[in-house]
Length: 467
Image (cartoon, rainbow, N blue to C red; front, top):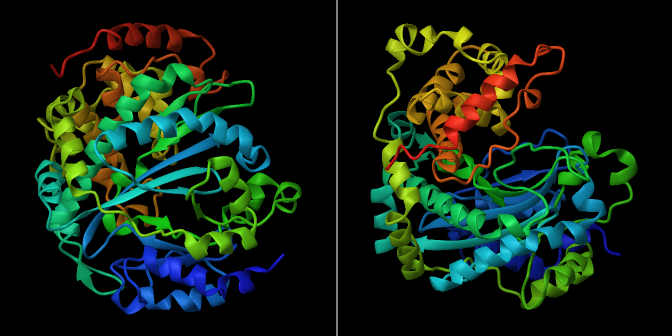
């Protein structure tokens, strides 16, 4: 068994990493930056020049590239198994984890192939990554940019110089990235409607905690969360990089588990199934051999992406998005007379707690979903639910510098839109719309909360207001 330093020294491994950065040499890489992290539980993800790759590898780092690219719009879908009670599950029983994901991955691949899209397929420690790109001079890019909705705060951010090159992202590519998020949400709706009944555990868009199952609270995450943040803040792992997440999460997984795990590497599923890929990603010698012949160039699919985008534009998902964006957040200067005056005693105690003590419950998808369900049951328009959540994010609840790095309005819009869309399109079964998911038994001892939620559930089941 070779060590990580010897593994990274192989020319084939280095060649493939440069290829994924968008060129044949680091000086011409189209990726705007890369990041690196060691095994520390607090990874340092500050942007580095692509030419720093060799230095990062010499230090045995895990390396990632920016989604922000100079020539292309990178499109990425992440499918993962997540267990909130037993987070080591995908590492100690990876075959079951992959078996559970198979219907979701197959459904995505079949639909993408219908549009002529054959993405690069990567396997990581918890699941799959599907990646392709659109040329910034293509009609597909222009169409996505015309559909993407940016809040004013994000438009302003995209005109500010960003590291490491000290150049702005640009409003057009920012809008196209937002457009991709809308299209990916449509694709997720298609998958949910077709595959949910085939999966023994829940499928969620992003990592939403769910009810207890036979092996704890486990889900399949169709993770679109990157589309809820500015383009220049999001990164994706570079193929053949070491995968340090298990070691970084030693305190969560347990040293007794981590110490027994083999090394992990991100590998392309090139001419092999996921079981074969699983063996390869845990063996540096096999990973090196794959690097000798398996391309990891991100494929360009302009026409297919345009066709997918046009299908989205005619869909019920797009109709919902138009309704969602038909309203605007209240201006911050009006919050004292609008969102701040919402009568909390009209809400069930579980929702009151989320709004009075939002950090960190209102950062978690589960907490946001609960507020969306409650307030939509009370006939709030979802854009104003997003405005209310934004008003919490932009107040001092101990967020630190989180919303200096990300954009509060964009994140509030994104998650509210996700969960409101599932309700409006009949894809949220509301089975876990319960007080005990938010409060302890002591905090809601009289049971009146669940009676209130049952009434709201009945109202939500009848909604088709965006029509």
